[in-house]
Length: 246
Length: 56
Image: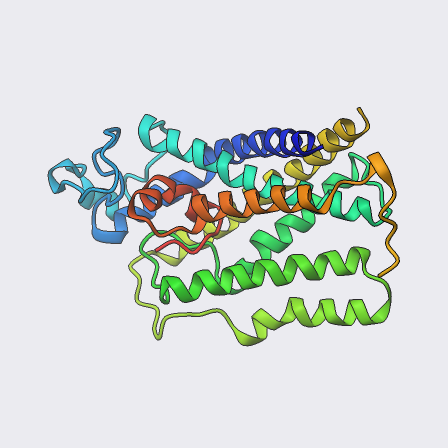
């Protein structure tokens, strides 16, 4: 049974992650690259486009010669494929969604043990709930960030992010499968708590990123996430319901 | 709650299997999305931003 769980989750996650990566590269990446020009007046990540020396200081000589014009908005990056950088994005997108897929299938199996049966099309709802729990709820406090945006300490934000995801997903599960008013009341408290406490924000917002870009980035990141998550739910429920009855 | 039947047989997935799958998923998400190692951060940079993880 373990191998059926793992293969269903990993195939669903890899497929959804690949779709998420393609949506990212076409719709989200151009906004991100544009914002990087403002982060330090030049491209700061992967500045030497397709070499494989990640994690080193960017070479100022490798910055585009016309970055002043680009930063002024005359030369927004378009759709283009940088093998090293975008290849890593595809790989890590598939890894992240494989992780989501494993947790989703584990929760589906746990729920089925309690007497529910999950049909393939119900997977769409599971995916939608996953999107709300993992992307929309954290974004309510910490909008998807562009590089260069002013932000609070990374440790505090990561802690708030994890707490929000866990509490929201647990709340959604209680709303869907809990019994009675007690469970629903607890779910409401759990879903509201991280936002009443509030996400960590910097004392003042001083980032160089234009708000127009930041708004477009947040909208596109959430939109791409919604598509990828609903498909992840559909794939996971379809593969798992077929595998377990095989 | 305490009266969950434990004899459902082949149709029930064991708690141990569920825990293994969930743990593996959590580890993958931590490594790809949250770990602050310099190399991991740089490699996963764009995906972390695009999927709403707190990045740097």
